[in-house]
Length: 100
Image (tube, rainbow, N blue to C red; front, side, top):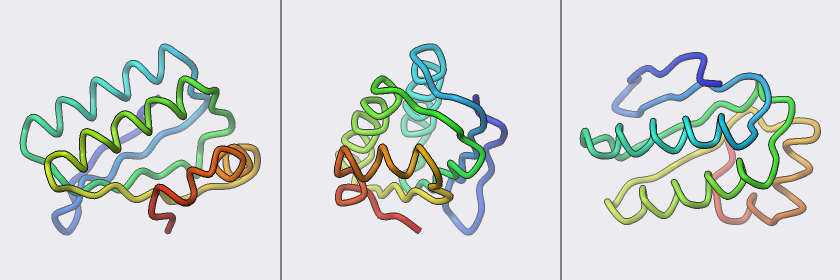
């Protein structure tokens, strides 16, 4: 679930909490698509309050990354910990995303 979105130093910061399953992944994808269509290109996603993410959530991040790169933008991930960090490493996503 999205806790907060705010523009900070030209970057759209998205704070997410809870678990990311199919419903949450759909909401996140729609939010990113909306923001990209509004002209935002630079994103920081804070996952420090996310305790679980299934394959749908991982797939959503890969999809969103492609959308952002297509418009010349960047996406950075912060706050990886616990199981979510393990999933990123297992799926080698830590090599595709800039991790802060």
